[in-house]
Image 1 (cartoon, rainbow over the protein chains, first blue to last red):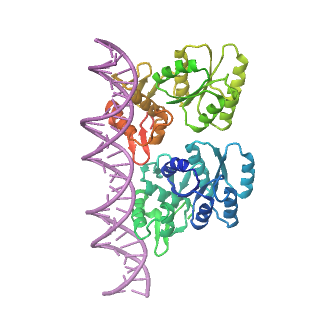
Image 2: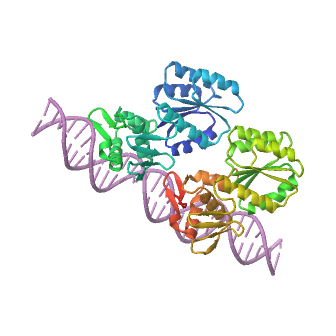
Length: 222
Length: 222
DNA sequence: GGCCAGATGAAATCAAGCTGAAAGCACAGA
DNA sequence: TCTGTGCTTTCAGCTTGATTTCATCTGGCC
């Protein structure tokens, strides 16, 4: 799950990043509006956290530009607590959620997870697919027979991405991009290795190989 | 267990702070309504003591604002003895308990401990979990076989936090935030050290490590 | 058969967490 | 004030588990 954090306050970034990582996001940071806008246009993020008080280019403008380029990711906007007028403008510009500063990190994480699931057309509180249920809080997957299986961080991120996109063929490039952070060395068979481990845990038949194209997770419908 | 004390009477603060510390709270103090409101929004407190007679911003307003920001901590309000109308307003604003001045420190402590347990879904008078029972008065833990074990202050605060949140994965950051007071240096392995000592005392198997995520106390259910 | 994408098992590397000991500190009692 | 005691904090080396790399195997497809 790739997340773009556009925030210039280095201290806040330092506080947020580990918490977001722990919640299973691969986090890229931009510390100004121009870089942020560029990265949002270039990379396929799953969700974006955007501070409105940015140097170089106002957050609202960045958001408006993303939307005019039809970037699909949901955006959560950080505002000063009482700036209600920013919220009105922000909604017009296409924000999906708001959080006033200061805030609890846990609340931010909870809202982001809800956003991601909502934007993938899932009910906001749980992720069930293909008879499996993901337990975010415990980083586990629950099998149809009720057994709960602990997953490592990478296994969990990969499986979640599959479950958010059931029935779609996902290329190795795409999987790498979403499971790892920017600038990851793409010349390796990491995805193959982790696909194998996932199959070991949740059953070989759940992830199909499409030679030359990618992998496909069999969801409820597919 | 982190506590925020919002009180402008320096003498009362000086009297209360050590007593609250002794009861196992990590205490932050705000001596006016504005700072108090900010700190309550900013830090993850487990309980708050709020004096209604505050300079700069009325206590009731502070409380109402916290609640409108959906801060979850329970609040105990200090009022003048006969100001019953304040209590009515206070309940409306979301207070959880009251104490009229002057009061005995012990009563305050007892009410706070009850509040904390109630808000964690525990019976208000005792804290039992996973076969262990905490003895607040003696700062001991009683094992299933009846043996009582003395704990140091930090060990006690840590164990209590675990027992208030059984079955949840608690990150090191979160544990640090709740066991220590504000501005604690987060770059140390203190939590690991104390986890180890706790395990030595109550049994290794009671606290599970979830690598990269945190620790988990196995309660009665979990 | 020969080639290629993917699968597999094992080894190497890396980082998180564990541990024992020692240093630092605060407080009580001489 | 000095000293001893117990608690807290730091530190360095060790262990364990997760990630990553690598060499080799398998099976589809020309």
